[in-house]
Length: 166
Image (cartoon, rainbow, N blue to C red; front, side, top):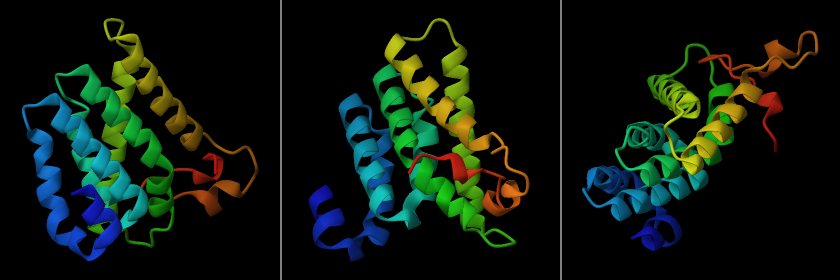
């Protein structure tokens, strides 16, 4: 499925990606993790799908299984820079898709912050959460150069992509 949608016939993505993403509610943990992997790869290659993928990742960040949450946070970390680039390129007023992208990204960072501060979480899960929070903090912190913030912030959420590693 991933081979066909991402490598052979990408014209099928708009039609089939919503059906693939709907599999994230499967009761098998392995299926949920695999769908997160497919979604991450799709969003990396086709930025037009960042919004729906991040919305699904926000839902999976609330999963009961720690390995699924860790995978969702890792995928969010990988998609943080392209997401911020999309938000930074927004024009006034931002589209509803960009507003949804901004909301999903902020929800994921908030969830990661709560997991990072929770003492009862597994070490691997806390490390993934801390990594995402650290990346987000770097992006949100001021650059320190006068006048630089106006050129590098997005319309949708004032994310500073100038400090995201390239």
